[in-house]
Length: 351
Image (cartoon, rainbow, N blue to C red; front, side, top):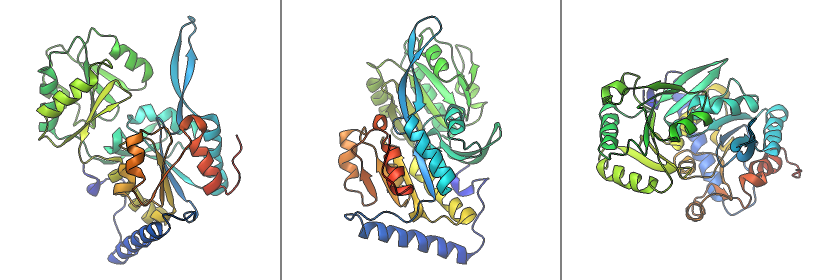
């Protein structure tokens, strides 16, 4: 279901509302361009789009009962405090944005106290809203059936079943073939809330497609092979309308080329205007990766903040964008909390 026919967002009531919305977008964009080199703040912030990994999440040591240690992802404690204050003191709406599946976002949604939040998952391929313990679909841009079949066949032709594993995501359902590598078990350990559906070793593309169209496909691989897999799949699938990227240095992620975070944010901005009267100029956003930078390029938010832990080439690109501020601080240094203190709460930052 393309965003334009999203099931959960109300359509424009009349042409007058359309004109008022787009006039607000243009006015907001012009104001941002004129104030790009000045210290002016955006108008009072009413909503924030927050990326998770690398933005509000940090790595923390996780000691197991057997004495072994691992790594878990948690919201920076100071960042969490400032997010909660933005909600309670300024009535700011929080919209989480992530490449994760909806269920893998849920612990952080609950931690922020926004159980009924609108959220963007699978790099923008899924827009949903939490309703109690259930996820309500608002809009989606999945991979088309023929392209999903092409990915499955292309991966099978690599002959890497003993070294890598292909995961097929339809919302929270993950059909997959068995594998002798330990990567799948490790992935399940980090993402226990997903619904894993084992398929037979000789499963065909149609066996995956019975679960519905995929919002994302992931190849789990070792750090040494991810670049080669990405390049090979990119060559085999160059005409399939897909975006192929590397995440966390160990995953090759594949989505519909039209399913960007920026496009999903733009769709959500329309909803915020009609449902709550929130103008794009009063919305800010945060991120640290290439998929996050599609937000200021595709959606006219008041200000986008790129964190200091973003890659240098991304910072260089961002500095040429009128509505982007490149921060010096990283996620580990509570970059988001510092901006909330200054821009939302209008007070000095305190750790």
